[in-house]
Amino acid sequence: MSWLRIYSEKDGGTALMSTGTHADIARELGQVGVRFERWQASQPVVPGASQDEVIAAYRPDIERLQRENGYQAVDVISLNPDHPDRAALRQKFLNEHTHSEDEVRFFVAGRGQFTLHIGDKVYEVLCEQGDLIGVPDGTRHWFDMSESPCFIAIRLFTNKEGWVANFTGDEIAARFPRLTAAQRAA
Image (cartoon, rainbow, N blue to C red; front, side, top):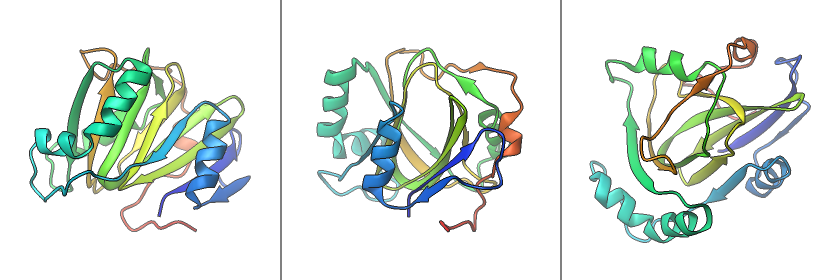
């Protein structure tokens, strides 16, 4: 189940708001300029599908976003619990950073937690299969895939070089909850 928890930037222990209702998540995130949608595959995606097959299953939605926002590059990223670099990748993503372009991820399978630092609030967003999140350029955020990552995601970019992070140096991410393999929405 997807969820959104909103915290004061000063307190990662007590949520000001919490919801697992997709419409509420989309509304709250939309108010701060973050896109949150649900997508359905236009054709079945079987385990082990190639990048081209995964992209083909979601082509109508991908093309819509490309037209609306000028995204030029699309790829698929997949991480699983036995990936040899999972700990290093997790640590890199856990540091607060920004991008000079939108960060757009659609979860084909699995889950991951985006945490957005907007104004004096922190928005913790658990994305699961079927969720698309679009984080606007310049938004301070971090991503947690848990100590046992398990996800397949489509990524859309305006920069054909792909994901380029600008780390803020702020230690805020260490003060907020991490995603655990066993964690469920409260």
